[in-house]
Image 1 (cartoon, rainbow, N blue to C red):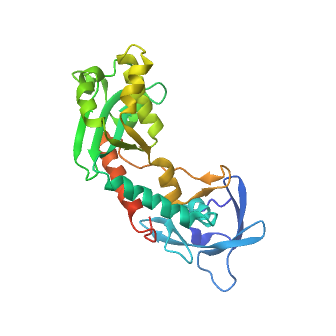
Image 2 (tube, rainbow, N blue to C red; image 1 turned 180 degrees about the vertical axis):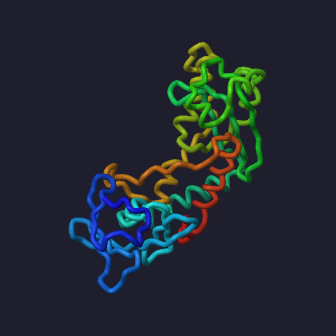
Length: 271
């Protein structure tokens, strides 16, 4: 396993395990530059080269315009199935359809935690990034310290915040009849379902009726396909972190920006 930070000092021959599968790296004999041919099971799969950028290595996949901050992702890009170009075009078409819909909103929810979570901030922006809803929410439930460390929303900040029930009429106006896209939609939609169940005293029909008046879309899997970093361990494209600051408005706007990127011509590099 290579542990030296500067790739220029790496060995000419080394093996690295990426997603539980060994990868062999061979530096061509005619260079001392940080360039390696990549082999898996003695089959050549491509070449990678390191360059310094911002004080750390940037890995370029030779023969393409791609560059990755970590070597493992460069290898994952070399492992893409031959169907990736077509799949990426399908994702681009999906994103264009969403952005063409005037009812589209991007939604993000900050929560009390990860399990059985309640909302502490709900935001929605339209396809141009204009805020159509943004409220802190009194969760009437404990905030997990780990969640506060991520989003910075403290009990003091929520002391005077309205409860979900107080916000429900406005949320209904904003959400019903709309297409709502979220990143890892099952989580955000699940928070709404939990809040609605509590509000309706467990009346599943009332909760289902409210949720059913929104068309929910998930951007996480399409974005994973669009990035195209193949995990041989999972047999699927590797999910990507959205990378936002964990403020609901900023994260919702970032999601719109990602949709704009995905909707661009398929040949446009995401990097």
